[in-house]
Length: 320
Image (tube, rainbow, N blue to C red; front, side, top):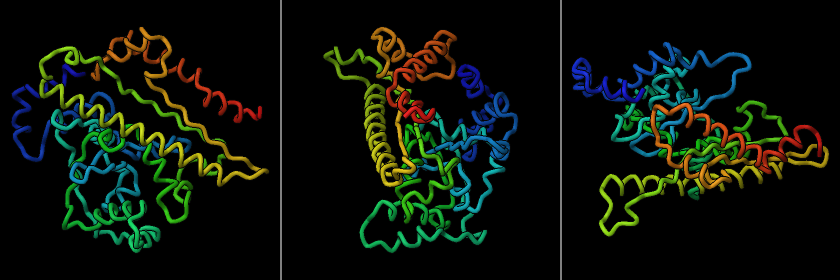
């Protein structure tokens, strides 16, 4: 797949399109993904009985905020998510800046009679700069189309590498804590578990052993990777604390509520040589069968070894 994309970029037939200011490398990738993976599917194809809730995250480049491909976010733009191609959402969520151009989304705010929810209106009146006021301001920005007529969307990992902020916001932003949680599947569940799969690899950098300074690309790669890693660690702690507090507040002697957080990452792999091998795998479009098999096997073993996962399974079976 990686080779095919590169050939398309350097194919003279594509140069005419790429010369346009409204068509970039990411649009080319989206067309290719739609052809080989999505076959014209839109978000409407995900809306069926029993289907899981899927949230695809991108980053709005100008403010650097997370933008989720969910209907409430599209409501702000007076747009219909169900008609939006899955291929473009998928491409936006993985559009690494510099390597790929942003996916552009037009803002139609003010054309559909949208009214902000009560919590947002109240949050804007808060005297202190609370978390919900910050979130409300972000929503308000979308509603002022003259100041923000276009969104330029790039890799979601920049604003939320693990995709956990949506869960945090569901419990911690609305005026009534947990009120937005009711919009998620199974809101009445009393045993909850979040499994966070973190594929961040800690590559060994040869330049740390050299007298000479690393190259510009090595510096950029190291700084961005370290920043994302630290931000991810902070996010895990925030989400874990928020859900533990929520579970405690919701628990009663008659109906206890439990929460378990399971992290799947290369750090949890016990075997040193296997962990080194997994960390050496590059972020590529194509992986060999061996690499895929070893990644799956490692994740399975880490999950089985997790005390949090074992505790959740015990509660879910009623063994407590």
